[in-house]
Length: 393
Image (tube, rainbow, N blue to C red; front, side, top):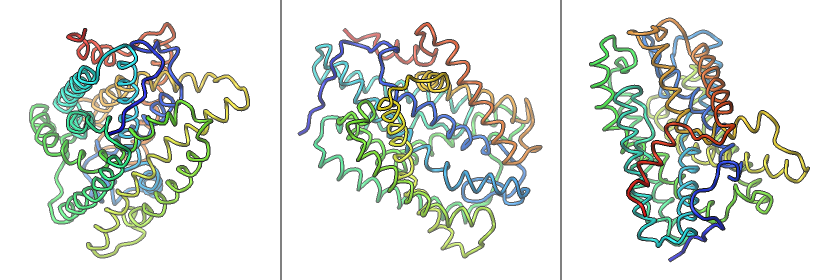
């Protein structure tokens, strides 16, 4: 059995003393999350495997192609890896403060349970594609792997990857066979939309769990044990290889589906489903490559003696407010796209939706950077923290 090495800190680390790389990665990740989710609010058009419209303009198809190749199925694994990384950091801090592993495990499970509750509320009120529930579920089920050996982590990640392929293939077959209906975001009745969101969330949460989340989560635990993002300069070689190999796998694996969903290539359904599965499983490598790239950037700045600039500080602030900013994205999208509010879902295409997503993300970056200057935590982070620790001695 492997044990995690406590970090030299007592209790929670003040925001100003946190290692910047994990938070910087989370801040950038939220951009990928925003552009991956915005098009899911559109309706009234035939859609491909990844939900992009098949009858859009040339610009719409170009934007969709870029996102399918570089964003879709890559942001979720990156988020999962950082979630696993963050749980190890949290466990380290609690152990360093003198807690025993049973107490730490209770804290981590309580946090995961509340994260699952946050996901429930997020889906009920805002977004059918919630991912918080899947992370809460993986934390509840797999938290014991924080203490398992590296060998056990790799074996479980391998099994998770195989399960991922099976589930995503079945999902692809369902996508081909099922009739295409409107998403909850397109429903004019808010109550009907809420009920449909909850039904979808109950089904999709374990599906997300069995897809991209498990392998990346476990590899994030392994990376955190070695402090890859906290001490990136000491692991530059490994990070470089991860970026190179992960990016190549993600691009090569994503290209067939990119051609299919942009209608450049129209193969048989069997080939389409295979391309969908290949795109998804290679996205795990892409998500990990993106996180490693952030570590390399931070290591390079430290080596050159450069202090973080205004942009880097703002992105780090956004990463520290990642839960709040993620929920704010959904609030903005509901206000703008749903038929009972802004009504843009049927009036814009993929390119415009992506532009809205980028502006929304920029708004959350500015908000987090402005309000966190005094060390203030995001309201969602504060609520999760209080709920997690209210019974902890």
